[in-house]
Length: 262
Image 1 (spheres, rainbow, N blue to C red):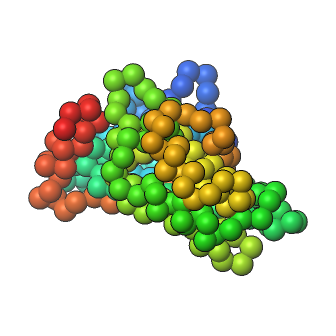
Image 2 (cartoon, rainbow, N blue to C red):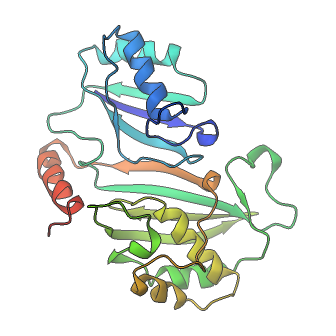
Image 3 (cartoon, rainbow, N blue to C red):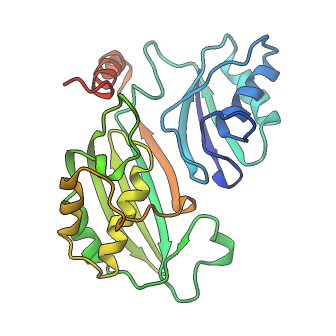
């Protein structure tokens, strides 16, 4: 089954199940086990394992269970907590894998540099930025990061996992009091988006020139000058997949790349 869902990340310690902690995966798996009366809790796989405090409007997951999708959708909606929204449950096509079949993920990071801070009604999704930001400088820095690179300088590395990613889009626009940065890539590693934002903010505050982004990228290791920005400004907005005919090839390709093979 494919599950399309959204959630307010404020009350969760991220997506991934952790003993004794409230997570999105944990709540969803518990709900599935309850409505389907399963002897063992099923395992749910998502497109992007969001960190603690990160939100999602367009998360996608899959789970291998035997049920009618419409019935499962209605039952899940009745039992999941109010900070999770089940948008749809559908029968997934053959070879569908929420994680490895994804072509790209799109996040948006929202900030405000207004002296009064964010709108109180939106403060859970907009980061207060204490210094004015120059959007043109931020976008000039972003251009140094586009394309396929080893993003080790912007990631918390995991043993055996590659940090090579293809950054498809990184651009900031100002709309009224809010700055919204769109980040699109084939995949992301742990804390990558928030680290990229820390680099752009450092340039936007005029502390470094746009070439600073290229310098950090080339160094290949974390730099204390690049702050990991707060989680609550980040939203997973969309995950894109190939059509049914392209799923098997995409899964094979993605698994090879994640293993570090060419």
